[in-house]
Image (cartoon, rainbow, N blue to C red; front, side, top):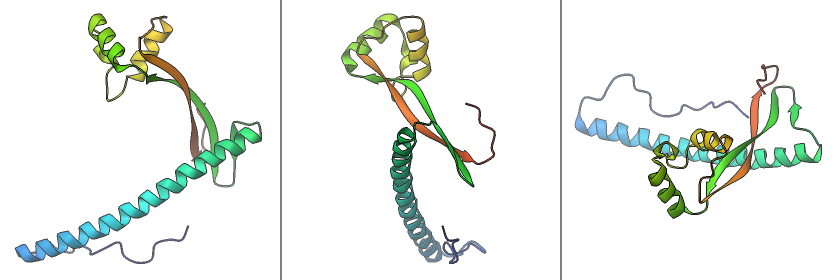
Length: 143
């Protein structure tokens, strides 16, 4: 990837003195931010596509790790909840006073604790999430 040679946007050498100058600079910086966010979104999409491809390549090679000249990857699998019936989950949580299960999704750690204790949370199925862990080559692997 080529290094950026053009400036990201107007540099704040000093704060503007007039409301109009403030408005102009705010607009300019907002436009720079929008362009950068668009670039970031495009890179994120490429990363997502490449991660999916890398998982397929690793699976085809029957390996869970790979190391290149500058990067290394390892496949990690973890069990996470997937709610299929929120009404059943809500009823159970209220009955059992298990509010620690709630975040914007079920709390994975609270759900796993119950799973380990052989407590079934109604309305929830588990699935194995597969992700790709990317680190710099030569970095210590904690897996």
